Length: 394
Ligand SMILES: Cc1ncc(COP(=O)(O)O)c(C=O)c1O
Image (cartoon, rainbow, N blue to C red):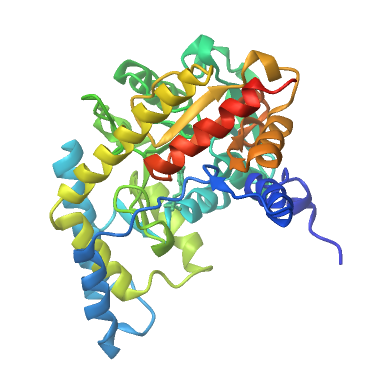
């Protein structure tokens, strides 16, 4: 068996590395506390589940979903209404909205839709892996834009070389950011839109975490920036806002031409979403939103608890304004270890799983990411165990 060169270009997938480490630890009988993957632990709200259950009983909903089906038309309208109410962004539900089988597939497929072999894509490093892996799968060339504490995790667009700009067709941004938890000021997003317009680059913004914002912070849709629709598409997801990660519901909005191309690409590959899932997604977007508020309160409590507990354990981590992650510099005592080695140490010694920063790109080296997807009791236990590692003889 010879895998394609395309697949050989991909770095080993982050969660595959962690799963291997976890399986090894489990085999030794260690109890695992998994703060690795950003997989929400809370159930999907009941009214959404009820809608799915009711719709699944109707045989009319068992066939392929077609763009002209009522449910898909309704779902597009629900997305457009949701964007209007959340961000005051007007979207034409036919041409400026595209439902996705989870935003991840859309993000991967957009590179396939837009990039020719050897076209360039500008991607921050570190980034959510599909932002760069999608480019590699499509045969594109990555231009890494380093982000770090020094630049507030905002790429320096003025530093992108002219010859790269000439070949660049796509640029990816994600704020609030996975994995760095950074948020972007409106001025930066406006600069990015202006840059994309000037150089005729399609700007892809990933807004998956807009709802998980704390302390009065309100995430910004890139489509709020005047002129953004000329060059931007934005991806969003129901996975985090409504605890629907396994349901696979996402969406893309924005530039109609780009979305038409993405839709065309998908048309050759998939048959859309299961209709009952679309009905349930409509319920999520148009139904009561107090479930989101409650969820945000849970993550805020966990964030505050874990920051304090880790500080007490001797590990000071910045408090993020958004996302359900903590982006943590590896403590000095272990700074000689790579992020994968440090992650392996935590898993092997105390069964606490985090994500190594290097899995998000080389610039993530020196950091690990905590996903706050366990309850406070588990977080308390995780912090206690981590304290043990921090007090161990290095
Ligand atoms: C930044 C970001 N974008 C997209 C996704 C994928 O979400 P979905 O479940 O909609 O595919 C994730 C999932 O963790 C994410 O962190």
